[in-house]
Each structure stands twice: as C-alpha cells, then as structure tokens.
Image 1 (cartoon, helix red, strand yellow):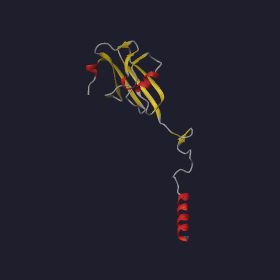
Image 2 (cartoon, rainbow, N blue to C red):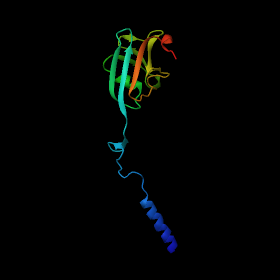
Image 3 (spheres, helix red, strand yellow):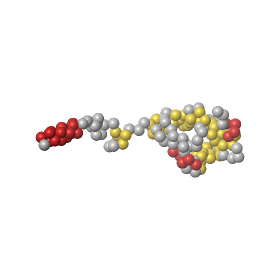
Length: 140
C-alpha cells in the first residue's frame, strides 16, 4: 500500500510540476487569445488605356484575398462580379470587360492562375492590372 501511495504521490508531483511552455497565458497573443497577424502594404498598379495609376493600400493582413482588397479600393471605381471563387474584376475606372478584352493581373510580376477570390495575399505585394485582349496578355 505504501508503494502504491508513493507512486501516486510521485505521479501527482510530476503532473503538477510539468511546464506547458507558457509562463504567461497572454504571451505571444494580441487582445486576449488571438495570435498576432502580420500585415503590410498592397500596391495596385493599373495599366489601361488611361494614364497608368498606382495606389497603395496599407495595413492589409496576411491571408486577405485580392477580392477583399479590390472591394476596399475607393480611389477608382471597380466593378466585381460574383464572389469568392467565382469573383472576377469586370471593370476598373472607365474600362469594362467586353468580348476578348478584359482585365488580367499579376502578383509580383507573375501571371495569376486563379481568380481574385482565390488569390490569398502575403503583403508586401504588388498587383499589376493590365487591360487588353486576354489571349495576348496571358504570357507564361
């Protein structure tokens, strides 16, 4: 019986003495239990028939979609059809998609192979929008 009590006491002491690795329950978090999220600037370069324009959107959180960023732009009219995986930019400024002409985008110079609703951003990043014949603009 003494041996059982000794083992039980030893087990309790080991469990109580175990360190979870966090001495401060709030350490490494912001506003309670939420982990810190990185953010940065998204630069939008618009290249249509009008003069090229550049806009910077500050404090965009990592994991934000390009659709969310485009919907937040107030400096120039932007038309988006659909949402999520079906979202696409139909118009920027005075230029709207028609026939084969439309808007395509590049992320840091690389043509995107998915839509704006599926493009997850990790700022800082530059998005370049180009208007023209989609077949001519998509060059790999």
